[in-house]
Image 1 (tube, rainbow, N blue to C red):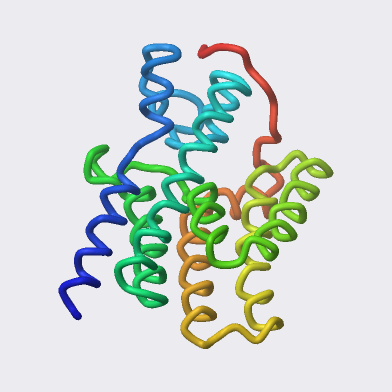
Image 2: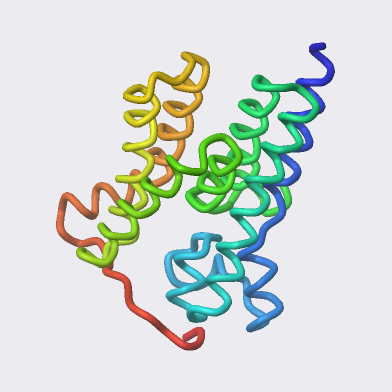
Amino acid sequence: MFIKYVFVSVIAYLLGNIATAYLVSKVAAKIDIREYGSGNAGSTNVLRVLGAKPAAIVFLGDVLKGAAAVLIGSYIGGSYGEILAGIFVVIGHNWPIVLGGKGGKGIATTIGLMIPIDPIMVFFIVIAGVLAILVTRYVSLGSVMGVMIYPIAMIITHKPIEYIIFSLFLSAMAIFRHRANIVRLIKGTESKLRFKLKAE
């Protein structure tokens, strides 16, 4: 039984290593996205540097790998398998060995892994995050709000304790990855969302 959980964790981590932002930026503009904008290998930085279409592809790719990991984990290891898969696919995205540990911040991947677990909850959390972004134009604020709402929603809806702990762990990872953004938000120096059509 232990072996299957190890197998699930490894598969999920490798799925997380599929560096969508890096691959799309290489194909679309022949650049390493980590050398442009914020230096983050995620859809928000792709949006700022390359525009909406490449960013949408990156976002979708990151969502799909999160969902795929959890579905595989659930099939192989049941509820504990999907929990481990969810954690390790985000770890793989945030700290991918293929990019020397310099990955994204895990929001799209977290959304993706949440969908097979509770799609209705995901819908409302995403709506809340999008509204925050539209009102403030701070993507980081919407992202942090969404991951903070997730464990609260899990507690309110009386989910099993292992899933509450799971949501808290995912939230903590996302907040950790956004720690610099949070400091800038507090100082009022965080960049608002602006659109660019090509790399500078």
